[in-house]
Image (cartoon, rainbow, N blue to C red):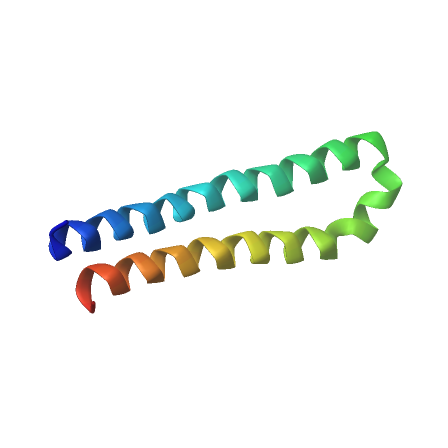
Length: 75
């Protein structure tokens, strides 16, 4: 396989991870809203965990984006 083709293929696979982060963020907020609608009194206590889950999912997406950019422009 040509090294340039392998580099672009690897960057494409890493970019898929950035797209999956959007699904993860949607799951985090969807689950929070579902729980908040079932028990509104407990929603305030879970808001900190909501932001931690959002940050973790977003961090993985940003990490996948950085790996894709490193593969494209540095390697």
